[in-house]
Length: 322
Ligand code: DGY
Image 1: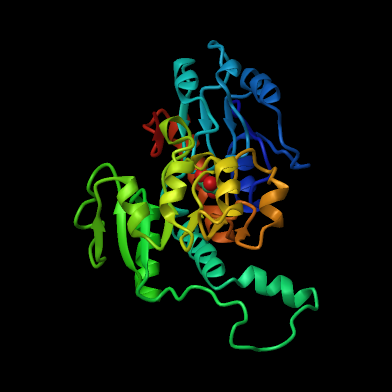
Image 2: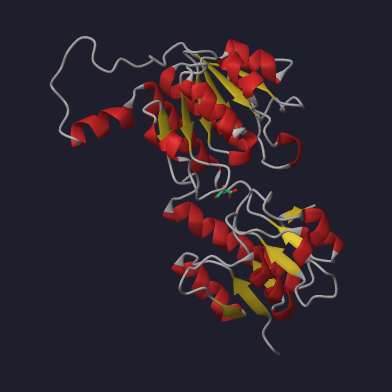
């Protein structure tokens, strides 16, 4: 039987590339050069499955219907880079990789939280630049996390995992906003208070951490009015999606001291990061490392492979996106 043709738009962990290459006629992006939307559009006519990542763009214009591809096996949980309505409207099944990156993304949120609160990036920059003049009582004082309030926006899997870590490790109090109430079993062992509105959380929290999907109504959800509610001592963490925050408004808020600092793993217009954010000392900036561990990146790839295997065997896919 002829093997199905599968395209991976970027380099994937070696073990998963090997697994896919065994089962399918797999084309690898050996140079790991990002593909343009137009190139991905052409690939939809040449492959049975196209497997994009969160750094690709798949706008409505590339889905015409009648294309060869039947499935998009997205390598990542977030899918705001794909026009899902256009893809499914053109008859494609779309899958993603939920669950396997929960712990690592929560770890990254905590990394940002601790680095920002304790000014770790700033301190390391000072030391490496040879500018440290020695211990003194007023040197680089940060925020003590114990007993402070963590406000979670979006109490899904990653929001809950972040809250658990912050409470267990630092004894933080947790408040959150989520449209629906998470189940008792999801929240078991966690002492977290649900507040009525996003604004209530922003006002109550010392540190706010974002855990909602990007795109749609969440685009620029954190606008200048909401940023102002965090307050001059307050800290903002984003390990979700860059477009949730109005980046221009954030830069203004950081510059004029409306908020205390921001820890960001994601940006609007990645991989471009505004020079103003880079120049600021009250930011911690990471290059979208949320899920970047060997274990998780392999699990993500294997999850895509499981979805392709199910699809081409005529079975329901385990992780459909609709
Ligand atoms: C995702 O999967 O959506 C992350 O942003 C990258 O792992």
